[in-house]
Image (cartoon, each protein chain N blue to C red):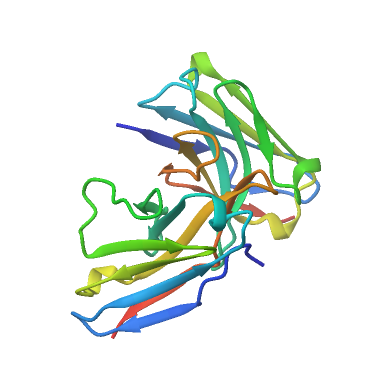
Length: 110
Length: 120
């Protein structure tokens, strides 16, 4: 049972916009930055978004994110076949005193 | 360029102790703010944080596994070691080590991971 709640799946056709939600509480998302990771099949997670809405260099601007209160969301616009992956949100939890993760969302490009 | 690599056994027996080493480059664990953590992922399941150690030897553990975990660092060797005692088949997972830019932030750079299977 993950501390952060994500939908298990999302899908879209090429070119569409897909949004993934991440729900937490005041002790985690509500008071800390949110990170997003992309995990391609058989590989390690890679950082997609940090500080709730900033993209590391090399991440396409098709990926964007936002945070409001105790929830966050990741949007993928102009969906491409190579975006098929699992996406995880993460943040720090002040009560657990460590990072917490969402259960992951599998994105399928139809 | 920050890189991390996990090493250790691929197969352990139930009740044994797992020892994993993370060897990293591109940063120093003596730099203020920096940390290295361990996260695992059972096959087909989500990520689970295990432990973190920071430049000042501050150590954090997942409350659910704290009694079984120990994390240490060797700054001169650029290594972090994780031990997990009393292994059980449910501990079968890919174990990742990862770099944390500062305290109170999730990890940013990840190693490739190492699959550990617990079976007799």
